[in-house]
Amino acid sequence: MKTNIKNFPGILLCFCIAVPAWFFGSLFPVIGGPVFAILAGMIITIFVKEKGICHNGITFTSKKILQLAVVLLGFGMNLSDILSKGKQSLPIILATISTSLIVSYIIYRLLHMDAKISTLIGIGSSICGGSAIAAAAPVIEADDEEIAQSISVIFLFNVAAALIFPSLGTALGLSNEGFGLFAGTAVNDTSSVTAAAAAWDGIHGSNTLDAATIVKLTRTLAIIPITLVLGILQARKKKDGASTFSFRRAFPMFILFFVLASVITTVFALPGTVTSPLKDLSKFFIVMAMVAIGLNTNIVSLIKTGAKPIFMGFVCWVSIAAVSLLLQMALGIM
Image (cartoon, rainbow, N blue to C red; front, side, top):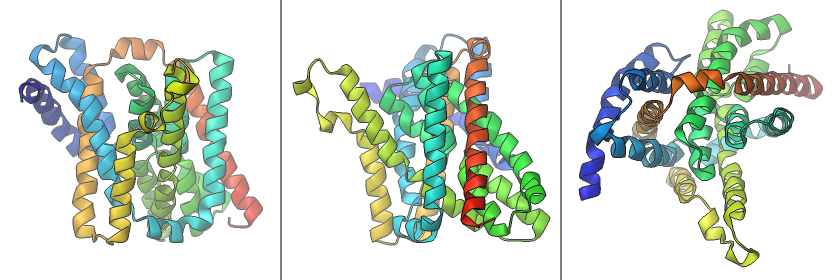
């Protein structure tokens, strides 16, 4: 009970900042609530460095509420629907995910970058932006500045993709099906996929939004194996000897609950009236967690160390887009 009371002021502070960030995110979906939240937190920290009684709750929000957000995300995923509708995009999804992970690893080694930031950027670029970073960060024990750096990089190329890709797709002569697949596999974050597909539909009078979203949700399933592998690798780094490794300790339990939430949605065919509020709550909790991360982040050091992560994000972004288009061309989808 005492712990809950200690956490309350910080949780309340994050909630109060998250509400306007959520509002602005709904007004400007290409930017999104998480980015407004993390920027608000970082700006406040410039002027208020000591958090006082809010410290414990801010830490709790950046860790535990972030994990809860990932769990609730599972209720928005009907596995049978996603796999039945998204299976035709699987070859391209697997290729783009592999490309991003390989490219980020090569750049990490060549530029001697921070391992955790490199991991988060690679995963965020390849799977589903901020949600993937939210899932992976607790597993690899990334600190708030590493998370903030990664989210900032992903945001930059989300905006670029949402603005550039509809015109690029038109110039390349993509079909509606081709652009839906392109947006779903080559744009980092769900909100930016939605923005890009909506812009395409506005230009061409089509309905690619549903197709792009399904492809994106299919990509999101990669959170499960990726975080499991990261958990095992993290546990092996810590172990003193072979006999100390425990699969149970290596498996991130909140990911297990994420899977269970997806299974419940699938088995019981939960209607949208049930899953939609849970998905919205998940998104709001991510915004709250980003506020907390921003409050624990030094924006000056973030800017000073930003060149290499931005370069990595750029190369991952371009590589994924190129692979998506080339494979569509090879498969005759364009």
